[in-house]
Amino acid sequence: MKAIMISINPQYVEKILSGEKTYEYRKSMFHDRSVETLLIYETKPVCKVVAVCHIDNVLVMPKHDLWELTKLQSGITEDFFNKYYGDKEVAKAIKISNVVRYDSPKELSDYGLKNAPRGFVYVDCSE
Image (cartoon, rainbow, N blue to C red; front, side, top):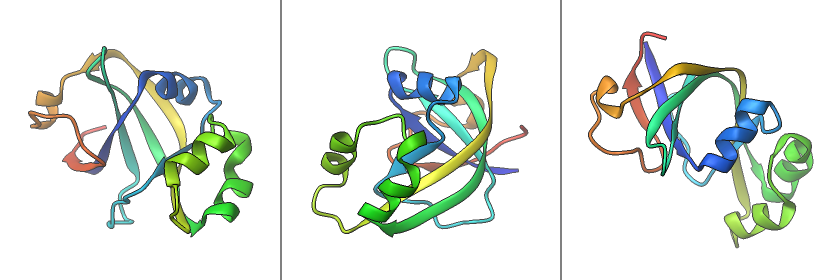
């Protein structure tokens, strides 16, 4: 099964795992909308794939509209959101659900990768 893997900083991984953050914002977005599985790679100091979740939807819309729609489950401040997107008029977010934390985090090599994904990477996954 094809999946997407993205890198996320530890403070946001915790918010995703707690259910506080159900939208993951991205400047670049994957194009294959048939992919329904998202693997979460937690950046330093963990450096492991720590969870898997379902992709419910991909939102692409004017920045202000996206913030208004997602802010209650964003896990970030409006100031951070605006700084992240800067002068961009269009913003993108992945709506996620059914997050499952791995009992034993996985190595990138388990997915045939040597380096952490920058943006995103497609991977084969048997989740």
